[in-house]
Amino acid sequence: MRDMQRTVYIPSLVVFAAVMAVVMISFFMSRNSNEREIVAEMQAYEQKSEDAVRDRLIVFEETLRAGIGVLEGDDDVTRGEWARFIETSAVIKRYPGAAAVGYAPIVKAADLNAFSDETSTRYQRKFVVYPEGARSEYVPIVFIAPQEEYEPILGFDISTDATRRKALETARDSGQAAVSSPVQSPVDQLGSDQYFVMYMPQYELGLPIDTAEQRKKAIKGYVYVGFGISSFMGSVSSDESDSGRAFGISIGDTQDSTYATGGYDSIIAGRHRTAESEVSIGGAAITFNYVYDTGSILPAYMNSRSVAVLVFGTITALLVAGSVWLTLLGKSNQLLLEKERSINEAKDSLLSIASHQLRTPATGVKQYLGLLLQGFSGELTNQQRMLLEKAYASNERQLKTINEILYLARLDAGRIVLSKTHFSIASVVRDTVTELSDQIKTKGHVVRLKIPRREKPFYGDEHMIRMAVENLLTNAVKYTHQKGVISVRVTFGKDLKIVVEDNGIGIPEDQQQEMFNQFVRLDNDLSVAVGGTGIGLYVVQHILELHDGNIAVDSHIGKGSKFTISLPFSSPDNSG
Ligand code: ADP
Image (spheres, rainbow, N blue to C red):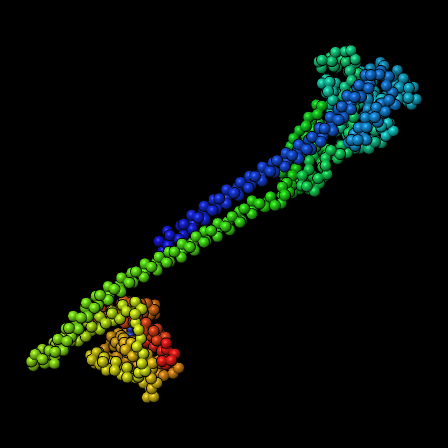
């Protein structure tokens, strides 16, 4: 078992572990590469979204700069000219996010009435600055394009709204475009959509505007563009509502998303990743909150790639280790068989040599004893005869044992050749009982024979069958206490059955198989007294097997044992 572990299991386990190590490395590499691709995908999407917003705002920043140019080029620009300028630049038409582009000059409190009157007269429509209230200066919208739509906004003082004012001041102080946080239209009739506004400062020509202080002094007005947040974002974000990615934006100071692209809510409801980035435009920051549906950032096959590597890799590892295991098992079994065979061969030759060397001298002893007993060297006294008969009997037993061992060696070497004839089982049984009569008498046993009168001759090796019957009967005699009853029954049915039954010491059930093995002697009350080699039953079983027969045991401790031989009848034609 230990050798088996060393030669079969350990190498298979090592191979399995090695292949699994490669599989795990591939698995983690595949997962890492997926992660890298996920990050790359996310970055590409984020870049694309930010670029779209930034590019669009830059377009309008340029438009506003152009507006300043228009105003600076002519001190007396009219609403009509403003409308034409916007129409010519075509920004509103081309970029649907922008709602309107306008202009609001700074009017000192002292000039307000004159300015309002002049504007009213100029456009023949009453111009009122609102909301009402006394302020040191006003920033009323005077131009707006498209005007028909946004007419009610004309006159609105943009500096009155804190959010707008903050952006105005940023624009004024920086000299750059500034973007406001979300605001609503000052007039209810224009609805409650959210807007954000980009302002570009206009300074008095000729005044220095190098520092914030100077710019504060030189400020003259603001050109601006208002964006409806939804339509602006709608126009810059491609519709990817099914792609498992979306973003929300918050503009300026607002923390909450003021706009989110399609699918945002459903993505955050599931397993998702987030990312955040900020785009700074004209002093206002636009924060992007990206969300990605974890499962669909990469195509499905890429997600299952790592799992596939793991599953198929494990199967491969099992297959490889399994085939190594099978190969080594085959090899190790072969080695074991070879080892067993060579041990058996060595044992057989040893047994054979030993037995031959023993048999020749033992046979010699038999012959000389026979001569003495027959009176070749003169009359024997009764005592001499008794002693010699004992020596002769001992020598007989010795020869029997040697013959058994020899037979065993030939049997194991497969060198037994059956010499089959038709013979009488009844005679074999009767002869055996007669041969053992001395021992039977010594032990005071009664032997009952039951053999049908009409006998069916048996075709087989008579010598061997005799040996088998003799062994069983000898055992019955040996393993039964004095004055036992032994019965031998023969029946000629479909098979030939020979039953040898005794009322002896019996055999424990758990040893009834084991006793058929070579050299096995069971430990019992009589085993020491009666002697034996442990070969008998082994030989019996093999003799029966050679005749396609078998032997069954039924035995109970203290009650006795019953051995039943079954032999099929055969004839010279079918016995091979
Ligand atoms: P041996 O008799 O030389 O020991 P066997 O192979 O004939 O060897 O028998 C093996 C063992 O089986 C014996 O040692 C004995 O313990 C047991 N055995 C065989 N026949 C009987 C029997 N009739 N009753 C009790 N035990 C038996």
